[in-house]
Image 1 (cartoon, protein in one colour):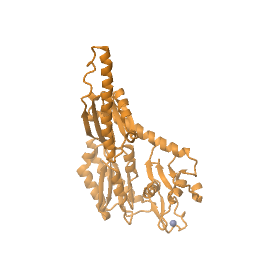
Image 2 (cartoon, protein in one colour):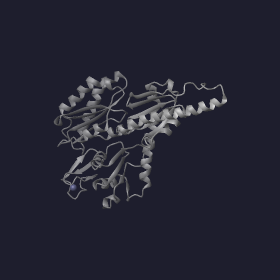
Image 3 (tube, protein in one colour):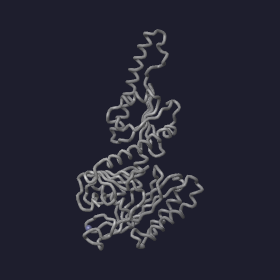
Amino acid sequence: MISRADVEKLRSMRAPEPAVLSLYLQVPLDPAGIRGLAAEAADLMGDVSARGPDDVSTAGVSHADRQALLDALAAHGRDWLGCTVAFFACDQLGLFEALPLPCLLPERAVLATRPHVRPLLAALQRCPDYRVAIADRRHAWVLSVSGNRVETVARQSDQGPRSPGFGGWYGLETHRVQQRIIQLSRHHYRATAAILQRAADLGRHVPLVIGGHHDSIAGLLQALPPGVREDFAGSFTADPHTLTPARVRELASPVIEGWVARRERELAGEILGEAPGRLAEVGLPACLAAVNEGAVAHLLVAHEGMIPGFACGRCGALSTGSDECPDGDTAARAVPDLLEEMMQRALDGDGQVTVIRDAPFIIAAKLRFPVTTEGSRR
Ligand SMILES: [Zn+2]
């Protein structure tokens, strides 16, 4: 599955001409659908060459790149059933990548000077890798989920309390045994928390889902050190003894979906709560001005489609019209998607980018400093 490193590697590639093909293609779940796939890919590639970013016809996808893509589809199409696959091809750069994505995304072909990675970023954020801890009073099981792959990270079994009926003969004893059970459980939850801490220490902070009976979820949650507690995304109740890795993923994935949607809403709410023009901007013109000033701390892109525009070949300013930069329209270079360009600029400037859904804006930005240029207030 894809990682942030894949995105960064692709981001570092650049061609002098708009010769880098990015194609997002949905491979049907039904193997019978594979037959029509080459024609569909060819259509998408044909469309991008006919139109070109500024409605001027371009040279289009090179024969070599088209062929490499169709060959990959013929050879591996069946490995990708039910997936959206991202292809990046540029013969000139020696680039060819085919990356199956962890979630479904709209189909799209783009020809630009660098790989079009906005949908890739959306996939990483919407379907993140995550960890699941399943615990009862004696056992713990930690799994790591990436796309549809589920791996066991650790499994542990404490000697713990043996049987709840262990000291049931005398009332007094029962109380002591109960106390002992609570102590042992605490010890066990702390040990499980330590496993999660070690996983987090390896530098990979991923959302954490806890599954099990009510009291074990609460027990484990209480034992989590603050650094791990931050990663807690939610929980599901289940009898740990009935769980298989596939079932764990089935139960955890709606928890993760809910967590992602919640975070998206919170981010959008934070920006909308800021007074516009101070440390937040909403809408394309204001955000373009903020990007051009290098003021973006966090860019939220909510629009899924592409918005064609221009980049000045001299100063780099991004704009919706070819005559907006003082350098004039001879310096303007058409770009197929302003949102992608803005995202790239924000990342280049060490800003954060989040691709969100269902927001009441196309794009919004948290700023490092207020942008006071004329353009920002239009
Ligand atoms: Zn300029």
